[in-house]
Image (cartoon, rainbow, N blue to C red):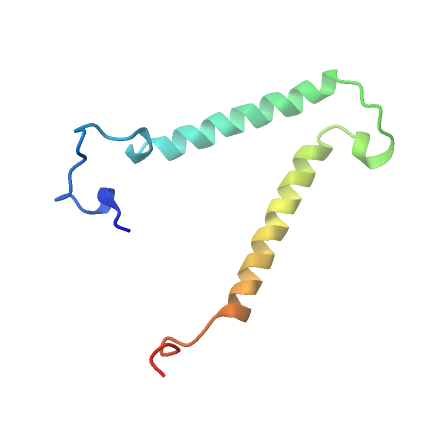
Length: 92
């Protein structure tokens, strides 16, 4: 599978670029997602929670999601060392 954006000699048949090919798109997406997260955390101040304890605190779901994401990344990085093979693995 070839990446058309890394090879300038390959042109898009339709002649237009996809919106994901634009170099400014990642920054825009991060900005949009950060604004959405901020709005949701602020909106949580105006919502009454029927749950008690830790799950009912403001911002719990945002912190929980961040923690689960970071733990998933840590597990994936650790798993990389378990699954890693020598460069000559398939040559033997």
